[in-house]
Image (cartoon, rainbow, N blue to C red; front, side, top):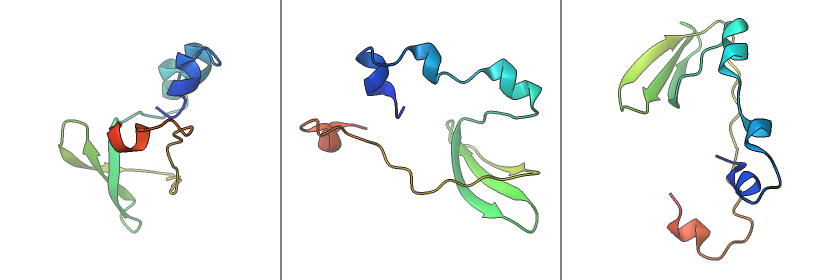
Length: 84
């Protein structure tokens, strides 16, 4: 939830950071809560660990990787040590 501080403080509205599930389905996109733990580019399969812990192979047509994102802590004392 990278924009949670802005929503909680009222700088942004919840609607401005929400993803439209209806719109994503219209464009043949699925939202799969979990994390990618591997990619087989030859088979075009992404190995995903779902939030339930189940590990599944998800085939893809187009894969967009965006590594390197970081969570901003806004210099709030103790946040890095105590947040999960």
